[in-house]
View: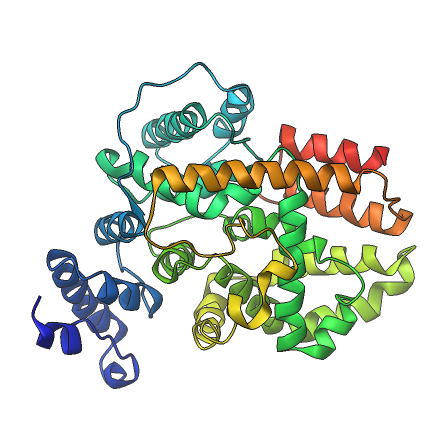
Amino acid sequence: MNSEWEETETSFDMASLSFISDLDQSKLKRVIISNALQNEDVKGLEQLGVSKFGFVNAQLRGKAWLSLLKSRVKGSSENKPLRQPHKDEYQVKLDVNRALSFISDEKRKLKLRDMLYDTIVKVLRKFPQLHYYQGYHEVISVFVLTCDPEILDTVVELFTLLYLRDYMMDSLQCTLEQLDVLSQFIIGRDEQLANVLQLTKRKPIFAIASVLTLLTHNFEYFEQDSPIFSIFDIIISTNNLSNIFVIYMELLVYFKEEILKQIKAFEADFENDMDVIHSVVQQTLLKLLRISAWDEILAQSRLRFDEESPKKYNFTKYVSRYSSLLPLVNSDESELIDILGKEIEWNESRKITKVSIKISPIIKWSLVIGIIAAVVKVGSSHTNTMHGSSLIESLKKVLST
């Protein structure tokens, strides 16, 4: 590989390009990404994906995602025979039938829904130890809208195994423990906000829907220039799922003043402070979050990706050493499946050790509110009738303890 190429052509210094328009910057970046793909320059792609515009468009994005994901997992298998139907396929069908409702072309929408269903079912049948969760279909819809059919299954499979396995256990235990990491991020970023949100005392359950869906829950629709694609560029390019917490943290900081004002205004109307926190955060993001805000939120996030790292926070204090929050590099698929199996065992052991712990009424209802927020997205046309089986079962478990 040409060393001059590595030193110059893969760099995309936004400051040095500020004198030209966004359109011209985007055009230039498309050329640079194409060259990086042609030269199989993984390091260059990682830098390009995390910077402004990400991988720019669907054609380049799908190829870049495939290249980066394959660089992380060696020898991934393809075209394995499908096994018997997965137990969650009925729920998948229900959710997919409501997905992508923002697409006005009915024929295209039905075609994409078929692709979405087939893609999810293939993953579940190939890895039956995974449990479908409400929101997984929203995540995978991003790939269906981006990737060509010939690479879609491989990209989704690798992304699922690398970054979504925590959420595909048979309980919310792994997800809830990820929220402790999010708390540490926010505490380190803005002590005042963290204190008002009571993050030293309780988990940020208000974030659970955003975490489970990698922020797709916070978008009404996914046009090709939607910031959600840049968010997925960032996760894949950095090989660091915890950067979703950095982005969510900056999202809260962006709306900090409104959140603080609303909590103060409505705290007398709720029986406990956790109810008002959940309600205010959800409603503030629902009412005020617009596409125009994402440029600044992502720009601030990019400044903090290196600072908010697994090493800094010692993630293993909060999550399993098999968690998808801990990046994997140069694993082969068999090693990844082994890690998945060990995480399932760890999840089972955590369920056993926690079964005798009494949950206080306030914490219990905080969990209930958070789970409901993940199941019912108020005001969203494409998810307003969600009733995911795995989350409903988790809700039942919380109420019964």
